[in-house]
Length: 369
Image 1: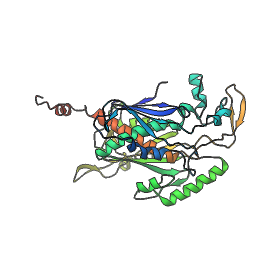
Image 2: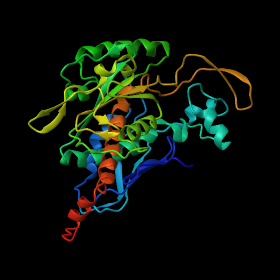
Image 3: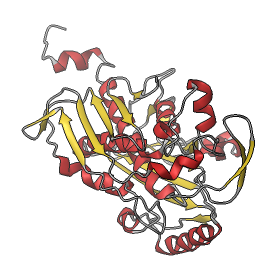
Image 4: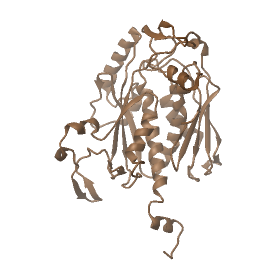
């Protein structure tokens, strides 16, 4: 199966299925010499881990990572970093009744059409559990970016009709709340809304926002590898994501040029912008401002509400999906969005190192140029 690798100078390849022995990732192209311990990855995996009854699946997984390669004596070696997480609480029998039917909203039908074969146990490769590898790789990249003064912070902006109104944003509050909203009142309102849907056997979607601060101007490779294009591809590759906005996003279609253009000015640090409708990216290249994104996540497709479908033999069926499923994917997907943004920025940093000849000469201490 193609399509399992992302990146240019820095590449990640994820592998594994929801009900297979393990899920994992190979991170290739990461620089040598950064201190890294398996304990550093636990906070990221904990944010993605299922088990919070209010907003997620009841599947109990410890999600303990094992570093197989690429780290020696506590530092990255420059060779591929391979990390796995073993599946411990899979219940494949929960899916036996779905072996020969296509679940609405899932990838069952399309995978079957492409490969004439599919893993019906929790969606196999198309399961959200695949994102464990992304979170591991993204966590490693985030550790590096923080050392360079960059911060990647994602949070839940909305769940269903409930929007976060907190200003200023409190990312620590988002980490404390079940919904990952940096707004106590919105969190409580969203929990009530989610509970009402669970009673009906239904689900909801929402919006995840991400802010990337401290990114220098100059990242991004025009014309086809623009930074916003790479970010959009990275985020759209997450299974439940259906739309990505950067900066003012869809609002730009309702603005005039004088409203949308970000005026330039000077401050103590040099050139700056008065507003940030561009979301920190101009012409596909970072402009030094905060990169702002919004990611729209669809409702969880696994619901117990009766739905109409067909079998693999073309027979009309009515199904009700039971088992352990998230009533809303958004809270657990927040760290996945953060991870894909970190991977993309890290890749852009490494790719940008050869954009100017003098930088290459300086790196190799050549004086004859």
